[in-house]
Amino acid sequence: MERSQERNGGEGVAGREPGGEGLRLRREIGLWSAVSLMAGCMIGSGVFMSPQGVLVYMGSPGASLVVWAGCGLLAMMGALCYAELSALVPKSGGEYAYILQIFGSLPAFLVIYTFVLLVRPAAIAAVSLSFAEYAVTPFYPGCSLMPQAVLKGVAASCILLLMLVNCWSSRLATMLVNVCAVAKVFSLLVIVVGGAVVLGQGRGHTETFLLAFHNTTQQAGRIGMAFYQGMWSFDGWNNVNYVVEELKNPKNLVWAVMIAIPLVTSLYLLVNISYLLVLSPNEILSSDAMAVSWGLLLEFLPLTLCCPRNQVLGAWAWLVPLAVVLSTFGSANGMFFGGSRVCYVAAREGHMPQLLSMVHVHRLTPTPALMFTTAVALVLVIPGSFSTIVNFLSFLGWITYGTTIGCLLYLRIKKKNLPRPYKVPTIIPVIMLLASLYLVLAPIIDHPQIEFLYIFLFLLSGIPVYFLFVYFQCQPRCLQMATLYLQLLLEVAPTTKNVD
Image 1 (cartoon, helix red, strand yellow):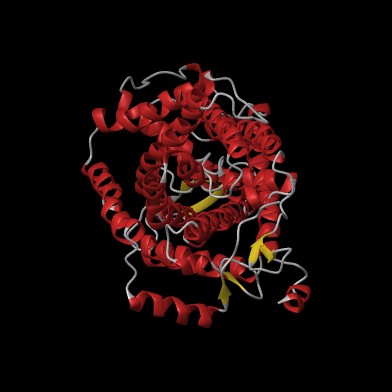
Image 2 (cartoon, rainbow, N blue to C red):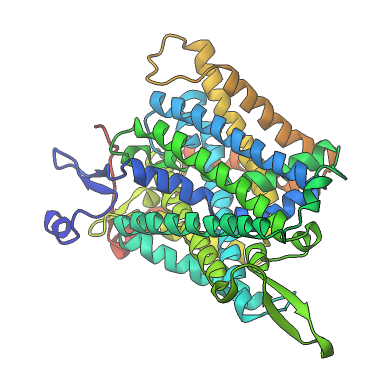
């Protein structure tokens, strides 16, 4: 084992315990890697796809910008609350670890049940579909409807490639996060600078801002759905909490939050202003790949021939779809990196099959958890569409966020004397809890959909599963044999928790 670790240069998320018993997570994530992981997961498909959804639900450009700023504020407050929880419960796993420690086994199981089987694979599927949209668009200029088989095939290829990268080396996956984070920021800066150039030349749609709040919706449910779309672009603000045991210095989590979220929020607001300067609201609403539409405007010539005319970047317009492809690819990679850790932590606690808590004995990566996440994501790619996945993922997400913030408030009331290396003002978790209740209830009350019932029933279906397989520990012999054979086939071994 030690020789294999030397061959791999110490790569991976696991290492030998000091006493030589089992494997454990390595602390290999520094401050800037934490910032890259957080910012890299947030800057993904959302800012290139969600502006359309926010504008649809809010009805006006000015109100949509207010929603974007509000989403950044919510992400910041939520991340600060999570930072305090990570100091009190210094374990990987994010919401699952906190709810398990404070509210007990059943609520934690329901969180991980929905996360592993639906939330994280669906998020990866949504980002991969966005990746496919931008990767394929340049090859189908002027086509409003691209072949679905091509889109699904490219999305599936993205998922499989990322599985291979993460299974091969956690260090390689971390390097990919850092590289793609640079590409993400660069792509957003290109859009921001392009908008400034258009404004300086007096060619922008400045009339959009003269009636910025015209037609703003007053319906609570539509505002909630707009926040669903906007918060999707900030999804990942809690990703570093999933890998706390791999931080070189856990105190860096607060610094990562203070650096990453204000940076991303500022970029998002400037990018949306650039979109509104270059594209009219109608062009935004009709666009399937907004960043490509920003770079190129299609003009119809005689005989209905379609000829691309460059709107901003001239011969360098190809940089936009390339940067977005790298951005979405990196975001999906960050979701793989963090999501598989939650799956593996839950298995380590006995809430998932034991096989998912094991790591490869040579590569030292959570291979079974990665392969399981991949399999579910591939299934969800087949019937999925971006906007539908986002709305219902956000609904489930805010149920979980609200429950987690409730953990913090519970500790404030019941265990006031706990040592807290870091503490947020009480008003922040109170606001977050109220926001969570609003974002869960408002869309259901104002615009009920049968899919919300399906999600709720899926959540409740975890209760009998918990009592059967966790509480009563019903483990069929065939499952035990399958675990043994797969352990030998995949060359994986159990892990132990980090204690240092």
